[in-house]
Length: 259
Image 1 (cartoon, rainbow, N blue to C red):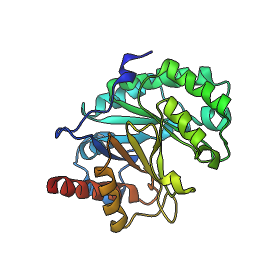
Image 2: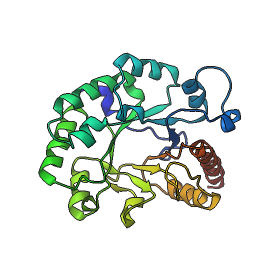
Image 3: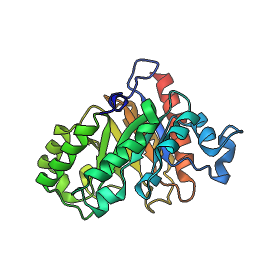
Image 4: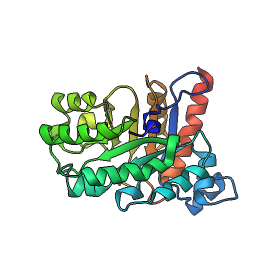
C-alpha cells in the first residue's frame, strides 16, 4: 500500500475544516478566461485560481504514471486532485473481477503523490446494490488504498440503511449530487468524515448554470460542514462550472469574514 494514499485532507489556515472548490477538468472557457491569471498552460493557470480539480478523463481512458507526475509537478503544494475511477471497473465490469484493472489504476495515480485528494467511484444508474459483490470490491480497494474515497451510487437500492452501512464500513462518503434522482441523493451520506458535492447543472444537466440563490444556500451548507468539504462543478458544457465555482468562492470568502 502506498503511504501517500493515507494523507488526509488538510485543515484550513483558520483551523476549520477545509472547503475546496473546483471543476471537473481544468479547461478554461473563453468567456471566463479573464478570471485566470495569465501565463502557463491551462492546468497551471487553473491551479492559480482553484485549489482542487476532478480528473474526469481517467473514466474514459488511462493516463500514464508519468503523466500524473507531470500534472502534480505543475500545481502548488496545496493543490489536490480527485480522480474518477475508470469505467472499465464501474460500468463495464460492474465491480466484478477487476483486480488487475484496479491495481493498474492505483499505480497510475500514485504519480500524484501527496497531491492526490481522493478517488471517486461513480456507479452506473443500472447497478443495483448487491452486497456480496460490493463488499468484495470495496475490500479489494481498501487492501490497496487507505486514502479518501467517495462513491456516487445512482440506483435507488443504494439509498437504504443497508447501502449507508456498507459505505460507512469501508469509509466511503456518499456523494451529494445535483440534480438528485432520489430525495437523499442531494445530501451527503456514508462516511461522515468529509463530504463531497458533485453539481452537474440543473435543469439541463451539464449545461445549466446555477442561480445566485442556489449558490448562496450551498455556501452556507458548505460552511456548516463538520468535516472537510469538497465541491466540484460538473456543468462544464457552456462554461457554467467556472463561473459557479468562482462565484461560490467569493460567497464563501464573504461568509467566512462574517464569522
